[in-house]
Length: 238
Image 1 (cartoon, rainbow, N blue to C red):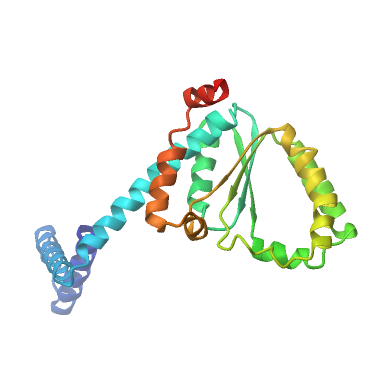
Image 2: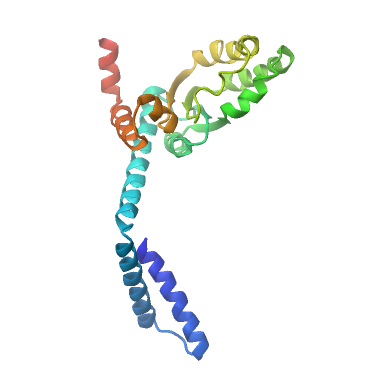
C-alpha cells in the first residue's frame, strides 16, 4: 500500500515541480521521487506506531476473504449441491454479510448456475409488520412463492445488528405474517427446495456468544470451513 501511494505521490510531486520549471521528468527521476516518498511514508507510519495495525488489517482482510471463498464453496457445492443450469436465490437479512453474498454469487457462476439476490432488513421489516394485514401480505406471498418455485436452491444469511428488533411487534401482527406470508412461501415452497440457512458473524452474534468480534470470527470460520461432504456423511451416519 505504501509503495503504491509513494509511486503516485512521487509522480505527482515530480510532475508539479517539473511543470513549474518547464522540464519533463525522466523515468529515473520519477523512480527516485517515488522511493523518497515511500521511505518518508514508511518512517511516518513507524513513528506513529500504526504500521502494525495496517499490516494486521491487511492480513485479516485477506484471510477473511479466503474464508468467505471456502464457505461459499461449501454452501453451494455441499449444502445445496447446486448443479450447472440451476437457479439459486440468495437471501440476505442485513448488510454486513455482503462479502459472503458476493463470494456465493461468484461460486454459483463458476459452476454454471444462475444467482439471484434478495436483500432484507429487520429494521424495515419491523415497520412493515407494525401495520401487517391479510390484504397486504397475501399478494406479496403469491409473488414470492412463484419466484421461489422457479428456483432450485435457497441460501439464507442472517446478519442483523439487533436480534431483538422484532421484540415489540404485536403478536397478532406476527400471526398475520406467519399465516399469510411465511407459511405459503417458506413452508409450502422453500422447504421443498435445496436450502441452507446460516448466521453471519457480526457484533450482535459475537455479543450473544460472549466474545469479541475478532475471536468469534476466528471460531466461526474454523467451524464452518470444516464442513465438507466427508463430514456431512459422517454426521448423517452418527
